[in-house]
Length: 399
Image (cartoon, rainbow, N blue to C red; front, side, top):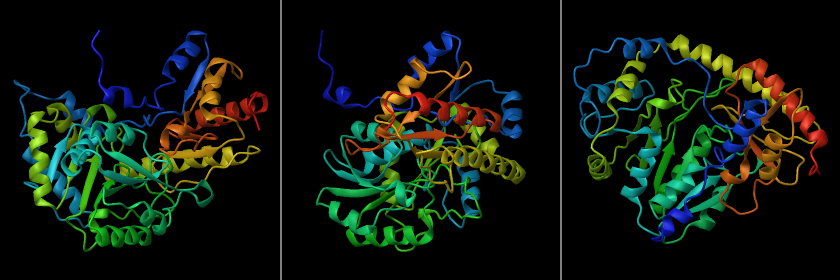
């Protein structure tokens, strides 16, 4: 049998999905499983999107331009203008197959084999996979749970910069922490990027989800590094339409956009149905977001306040997105999360969590931490917290 590539061997399994077989087996045994492991919201997709898709009158499902339908890009330009970001829809916005493809195209366009990309950890686990795909080296700089996962000191970034360093990647608000970088933190990053002439890749797919009066500041609003910033966006979480698989790659850097488009041409075009849904979603009324944000705040408070009442549990309160990282009094998060599905139940119920080890690049970190997504209704979250509380009372590896 022919040998597979080294890249295939290096590609990490998803910490979010690797426990799925254990969850399926638990369900076969009759257990109810509360899924807090994955960011799949149960919020309804906006009615304007569903109505558009139900009433489609297409005779041919055709290719779009490799950069996406012009009408959609024009609509997105109007959307970003609402955030003080002026974009030319013809050459500064490219529609992609989800935010994932946007990041892969960005890495392929900007980084060569062996180049280094600094990312504050814990970070979205698939960044590791995208790094393997692009043959680059992910260099973590560690944010601490004791600081609520705030941006690490700039001195920590400086120590990691080498001649191979080509960029910094941030997710704001963050997955998996829910941390929202403030304007001052972003400006310190801006100064560092400018000093070393680096790319700043900004994953802003959770832009709309900011809580407690906090404001999101886009990397594209940072003055003096306009051509260094590469923005990644997606419709998945904003409109609760993860399956549409439509995102965007955005930059004021004309050379970058022209080069990235060649990767877009190689895959022909982004999905037609997803673009139609994404364009329709731009007409979503503000009332939709108001109600969704109110719901997420309530869910966050149910989950995070409930977790912090459990003895030995530490969980900073997120300012954005719909994730939280909790530190538990356990020996090993991977073992604990599997044990929850294989060996534990409380009143016929259990929970599925994502071990945080997969969100760190530094070996050994996250062993006592789990990521939780508060994407279930409040009643389910109350029961899930109770399950966790009871599980910690009997887990053999509790410390």
